[in-house]
Length: 365
Picture 1 (tube, helix red, strand yellow):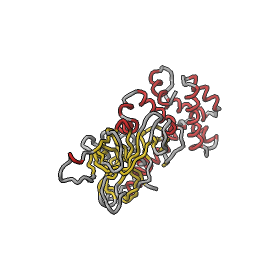
Picture 2: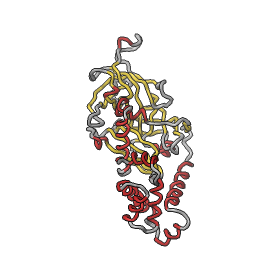
Picture 3: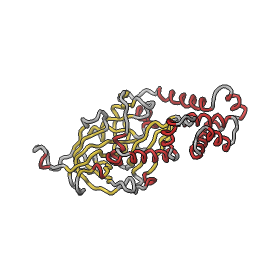
Picture 4: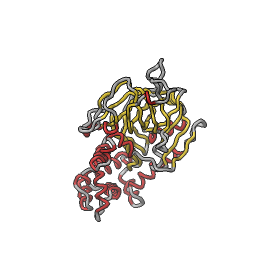
């Protein structure tokens, strides 16, 4: 049974199977110098399955060893009468977060809080197809992949916050470029989203940072200018780790990619007469409040098959969004589209396509 299935079943049970409470109990038992076998036995007695009990014990062991290995047994014993190890752990990380939050942004950067809850439901629809995501099997698959991701080593770490990722080859896909990332804060899951790895980098100057109000502002959308020429906004896939860098440095190099929500062939003959047949461009989508969605008309430079799952097909497209004769890659991004969201009969290099996409980006290290 996957970890997220366990979360759901816990709410239906009258036994003490809440994951947070089980973790708290396991941490306290470590303080009492209980063995791992004794802890697993205790958790099972509280209603956890063998697999979940082992998983919780391992997580508690990792937390105990990583953050408190330097303390002597006498110090731990004295702390036990005052507060639990989880309380100390949380206090320690909160102090770090509070210290980080005091950073003043660069005077050229405006930081604001988005009061509406952001989410990634449409982005998983872009990944697996909206038809698939409307089925329970699609949602369960995402949950199972997220559970696998929880067990992976951290890709990015900054004190209390971790970002982990897992390739969809773990679920039968055929590309290591398509992944799912999760954000953890104080070992609690903040969010998850699809991630398209790319080597495409643009010089970027940040103007606005819009933090999402939920999840301790660990997620944000950035907008500004690319190559000192064009405006663009994107969801920052590394913001939870690099928020201070985004705020302090207006000039950064950004890896930029996109997920297409829909792609169609553009009929150049039916477009406005003042537009050339090779016209390309993009505008913020009116269908979304977020500043990372764009309606576009672009030239398909090339494409390659990329299946997220064994029986789920798609393509990574290279799409030119700005015509620049001197530099074909001036603004030409990697964009994933699922076959379910591809509304044309055949892809051909050089064809003009149109649709709506969600941009994501991160600081190129």
